[in-house]
Amino acid sequence: MSEVIKTHKCAICGKLTTETEYTPFCSKRCADVDLNRWFNGSYAVPSEDLDELETEELTEALADAERNGK
Image 1 (cartoon, rainbow, N blue to C red):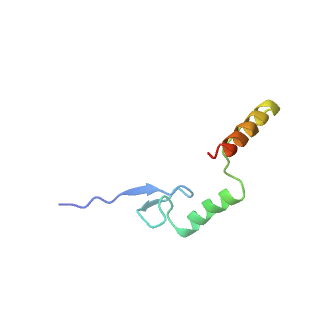
Image 2: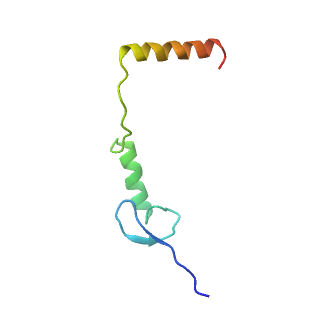
Image 3: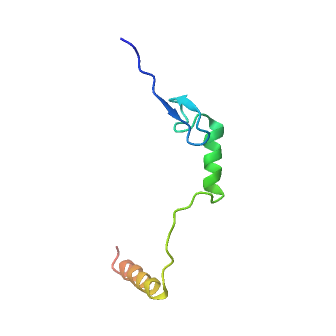
């Protein structure tokens, strides 16, 4: 019976690699490059700014939740 070797492309450099402790990356270097991108803000989740009314409603809801012990 032959053994199946799973390979994938590194998320940073695209190099084909087998399962490693750094999956989905091929090496510690690529894992560190990805982490640095998170730290310096290269990756960001888009959001919409709340208008003043939405901000007030959210603040009131949070205050109510704190008063009610939730």
